[in-house]
Structures are given as structure tokens and as C-alpha cells.
Image (tube, rainbow, N blue to C red):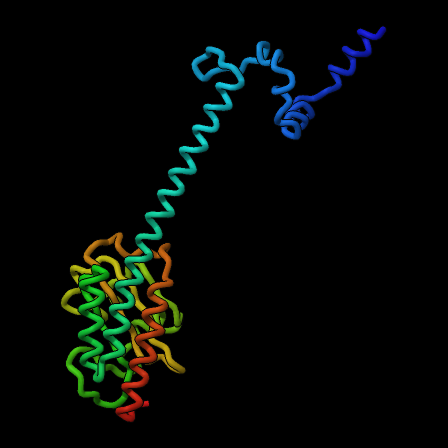
Amino acid sequence: MTDELAKTAEEALSAEQVADYLGRHPDFFTEHVHLLEKLYVPHQRGSAVSLVERQTSLLRSRNEQLHGRLSELIEAARYNDGQFEKTKRMVLGLLEAETLDEVAVQIEESLCRDFYGNETVLVLFSENKLECNGLRVLSRGECSIVQPLIDTNLPSCGQLSEPMNRFLFQDAAVRVQSSAVVPLVKGETLGLLAIGSYDPNYFQSSQGTLFLSYVGEVLSRILARLLRQQGQI
């Protein structure tokens, strides 16, 4: 009768209950070493390995995954550190700019030299004539083709429509295959910064825009200061 009760109790235990118990008692096999001689886990090639060997294999696999993840984090940290240094150089250069032309030159040098943009365009909106050679000054009415980019107030990345691409990059439009467009906003929209790449995959709609937003905010404040000095706003 006792044997029958034991058999019934054993059958009543589910695999989940056994797994739960072992999970809560990781030292179980330390106190019941003899059971290891009876336990085998099927190997992927059909042979059998001991539980200890299987556990070692799992730990090794997990260690490799963690090592790979750590390498990714280190690489991301190095990339971000490089981006910070480039951004710092650009911001310091912009802060020293005393004219709109100097701003345009600094933007082109930084974005093309440090951030590998092939073409840069700085467009300002103004109904008045501005004395500057390094950027385009257009009335808002002339920019209706890019109004969707202006209305977002957020950076846009990817491939532009042919009319937008041609409007922004003009003669270079045939070579520009992807771009980032940043509205410059300080109370009102002051203009647009467009960065073009000859690589169709360099700017993608799925990429983050944190850096572009930061550049836009800095540039907007500097432009607002210079335009205010000229009595334009």
C-alpha cells in the first residue's frame, strides 16, 4: 500500500513543479550527488552529456552573449565620445561667428569635414534683403515646396521627393541620394538646414535625430542673435 501511495504521489508531480523546486533549491544536487549518475540531457548530436556539462555549456554561451553585448556598449561609447568632440568643435566655432557668412562657412566645414555630409545648404526666411554670400535668403512664399518639412518643426531624414531635393540642393541634387533637413526655430521658423549625402543609405528615416535636433537648437539661437543685431527680427 505504501508503494502504491508513493507511486501515486510521484505521478502527481508535474515537470513544472519539479523545475520550480530545482529552481528554488539550486544546491539540491550538491546534497544528492548520487542522482547525477542517473541524470542525462540529450546532446544536439544525439549523444548524452551530464547535467554539469550541460550547465557549463549554458554558462559559456551566456558568457559569450554578455561579452558580445559589452563589446557593443564599448563601441557605442567610443562613437558617442567622438560625436561629442566633433559637436563641441562645431558649437565653439559657431559661437565665435560674428556674421551670417561666418555661420555658413562654419556649418559647411563642420558638417562636411567632421560629419561626412557631402552637401550643406542653409536657407533663411526673410522678406528683406540680407547681405550674405554663404547662404540662401528666400521669402516664405518661395519655399512652399518644402512647407511639409517646415511644418514638422523636427528633423527629417531619408530620401526627399525629387522636387524638394532639387529645390534644396539645386545643381548638386542629381548627386544627393539621401538627406537630413532641420527646421531652425526660435519663436518662429527662421529657416532650414539641409545636409545631403551621395550615399542613399547614409540618412535613413529610422535613424535617431538627437544630434540633429541639438545642432538645430544651437544654430537657431545663434542665427536669431545675428538677425536681431541686423534688425531683421
